[in-house]
Length: 175
Image 1 (cartoon, helix red, strand yellow):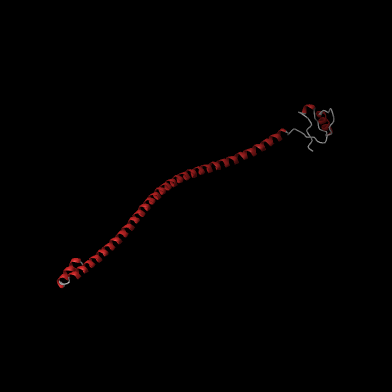
Image 2 (cartoon, helix red, strand yellow):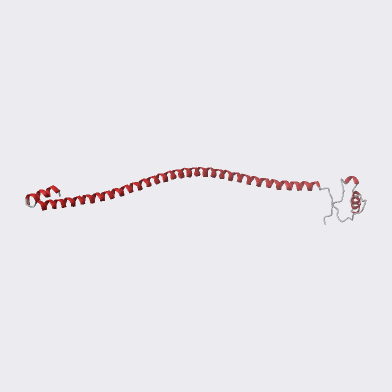
């Protein structure tokens, strides 16, 4: 209720009580001023809280910007890693294909080597087709191996001439 209205109401009803009503009006005015000051103090406290909240919001906003920047960096690095992984996967696939090719080639070469080994053994065997190995003949000094072969052929009743012998020699013993 406005202060002036109350005063006017009291003036109409109590014109004889001016000193009491002035004191009463002063008390009411002081009470209202105190109420206003109290409300202003509450508003100031709320404003201080708002200032504190604004400072907190600014700090959070700054932190959020840093997080966004960090996230953008991490995303860029992630994309680079994905590209590198794709390249590595391609390299691995090529290496696997090369590995399969080389494994097949090794198998081919091993087969060729086995075949060539068998062919070599066959050639050696063919080269020895006219050779005879004689064992158990005691060794004597100043012997001629061609004479020993002719003597053994004679004992076996086989006709053999010196021209039939390509070469004869002793080998190391197989013992």
